[in-house]
Image (cartoon, rainbow, N blue to C red; front, side):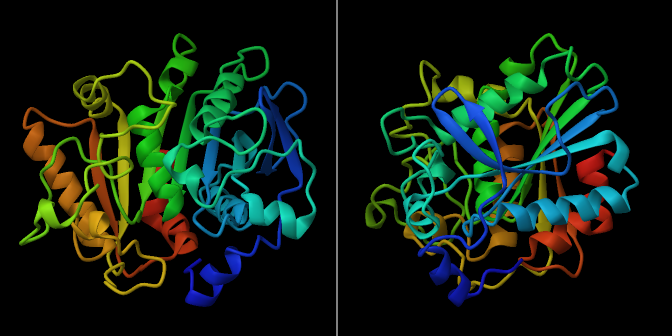
Length: 317
C-alpha cells in the first residue's frame, strides 16, 4: 500500500475504484465500502472497525486489508468494517458520479474541511454521523467498541479527529468504547509553538502552527473549544500510535515535505516518536495513549494492519 510517485500523480486525476455502497447523511451520500450488509439489525456485531484511506482515496484497498486482519484475528463473525471514501472533484469528473455523492476539494478532507456543493459538510462531521448511527442500541445491541483507524493520510485524519471530533459525544451513554489507531501519518497537530526539529526557525516558516499542524486558524467544524480544553480532552482519549520501524525515508514520494511538516522531524517514524515524546513532556502525570512499533515494516498500510502488532492494536488482544 506504498504510494509511488506514479500512484500519487494518478490519484490527482481521479480514483479508478469508487466504493459500491452509499450511506445517506444529512448533506448527501457518503461513498463507503462494507464487509457486510448492515441494512437490518446486527445482533452479532460486537466491534465496528472504521478504516480510513490515505491520499489515494483507495477505500476498497483498505477495506480488503481490514478484512484480512479481521480474518487473521478470528474476528470476522463479530466485526463490521466500514471504509468511508472521501471523494474529491477529480473523482467525480473521472467516474461521472451523481451530485448527491459527497466530494471535497483536493485533499481538504484530511483536515476536516467542508464538502464542495450546496450543502457543505466537514469530513469530520461525516464521521460524527456514522458514529451516531452506531450508537443505536436497537440496531447494534451487542456492540462493545468502535475502532477508528487510518494509515498515512488516513492516520492524519484519525489523529485530528481524535483531537477535535465529536465521536465520544456521539456514543456517550451507550456503553460503547471508542478507540483511535493512528498509523504512519506525515504530520500531527501540536498544541504549542514548540517543534522538535533541530535548528527550527519559526520566522522562516510562516503558518507552521496553523491547522492542521497546530491549533491556529481552526476549521469551521471546531466551535467553542479552546486549545487548552482540546488538549485536556485529547490526552484522555484512547489513542494508539502505530509506527513502522522502517518508515524512515526522508524522501518518500508521499511524505509531506512542507516546512510545517519538516519542523516535526525528517521522516514519519521520527515524527511519531517526537510527537509522543512531546505529549509525555506536557503530561508527565500520564497519558491514556501508547506508541507501538511494527518491526520490519515501512510505509505499507496492509502490512501495518495485518502484522501481529497491528492485529493486537485493532482488536484489543
